[in-house]
Length: 301
Image (cartoon, rainbow, N blue to C red):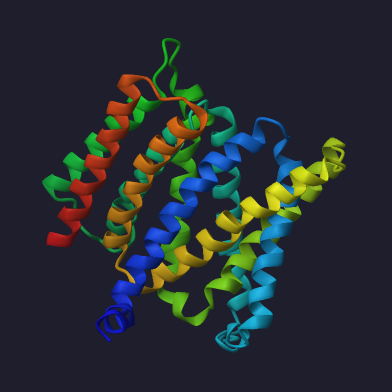
């Protein structure tokens, strides 16, 4: 009875969904990097997102309330279009960053930049003032991000548009999407939001394969491996992430999300035998500290 009462709490359910998202995304970081070492992204994307669409569609037929939960308002198509476009662009940048960066944990640490954008958007649209703690957190996080992306031939242009630096832009788009989505998320079942995002990404992958002339004929065993891996990304992670966002405060969600970076760091070492440079790990830790400073400052407010 006690276990059942614990899991009946909306917040506790949100915590479980958040950890499921963190762990599944850890797998996605490692699996994606391994696949992209052997396949062009558009080819990988066709099979990855096709399998993700299959898993989500099965759930639609198994759970009839998925469709029933939709509130068909006049502007819902425009809403889905905007959220899907933002999600697709942010996700494509994430995949490019994974492909361009030797160690996926660096990309994971860079995604901790998200709360900075949440604070900035709150300032711009909600007229919230920055506290001294928030400003300190922003500076610490940005310093960590620069350390992660630093190289001897460092330039701001290369930092922003290659490798882990792309996550700065990707995280901004993702933060904007969350701001738009949060007030309406109770009107849409997580599976439908996940399908909306997957359709955009699958369409992009198919079009890219056609334009670039990629051959989709690959080893059937590789297709099965991609399909199995996609259970983590387009299905479990997306479903758990939307459910966590519905049940948790954004601040709680931000704190839990930072733990993913350390899981990816450990998994990268165990599976791939690689670790970032010492200064990059220090930069990653700074991004986590900065996020925590910002988050607790916003909780106080």
